[in-house]
Length: 292
Image (tube, rainbow, N blue to C red; front, side, top):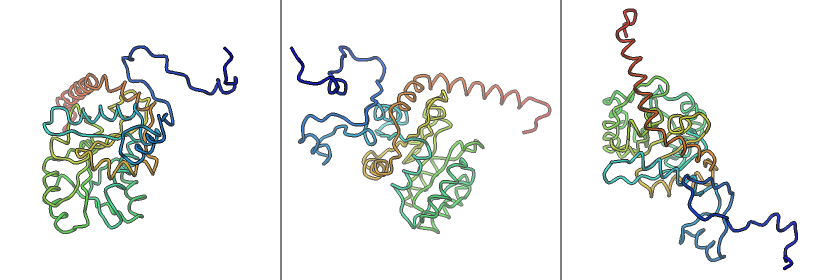
C-alpha cells in the first residue's frame, strides 16, 4: 500500500516508541517539547487544571525524577517531612533563583564572611546593586546573630554553608533555625560538602537546602548542575518555580541523568571519603612537627 506521506515527511515524523518492557535505569528524555493529546489537554495543563509536561525548560521527566530522588535523600527517615526539589543549571543558579523568589528590593540576607567565593560575589555584584543587601557576620556567634535579627527587621533570610567551602567551618544549624523561627526569618543552607548522607539540615529545622550537584552528589566530575530542596512544596512551586521558568535557570536531562548515576554510589563514596579524612587527621594529630 502506497504511503500518503512523502519521503521528506516520513524522515521528520516520529513513530511509535518501540519499547516492550521498562528500562532498568532512568531514560534521558532529550526532548524540548511534549506531544499533547488534544487542545483541551493543552489548555488544562497551561491553566493548572491538569498535570503534564509541555516544555523541558520548566518540566522534564528525567529532571523531575532526579530532583525527587535528591529530595527523598534529604528527608530520609525524617518524620513528617515530604521535601520537594528543582534542578538547576548550577549551584550558583539555584542560589540566585532562591534569592529572587524569596526576597525583594529592601530585604537583607544575614550570612557569613567565609562563604564560597562565587556566592559572595553573587551577593555583592548582583543582589546588592538590585537592592538586596548581604550582611556578613560570624554565624557561629549566636548572640550576635540574635542581636542582628533584633536590630534589623529588613533581614528576611539567614544563608549559610556548613561545612563552608573551602574553610570547612561548621555552624550550629539547629540553633540558627530556632533563632530564625523566633524572628520570622527564612533559613537556607548550602549542604554541598556533607551531602544528605552525612547531614540533613531539614532535621534541624532549616527551610531550604542548596547543593552544587557537581560535587559529591554526582561525584565523577562529568556534570555541572545544582539543586534546591524545600520542606514546603507549595512555597517551592509558588515562589521558586516561576522564577526558574522565566529566568531560564533550569537544569537539563543529560546532567540530571549523570547525577542519577552518581547518586548510586553516594553512600560508598562518602564512607570512603570519611575514612580517608580520618586517617589523615589521626596521622597529623600524632605528628611531632604539627601542633594544630
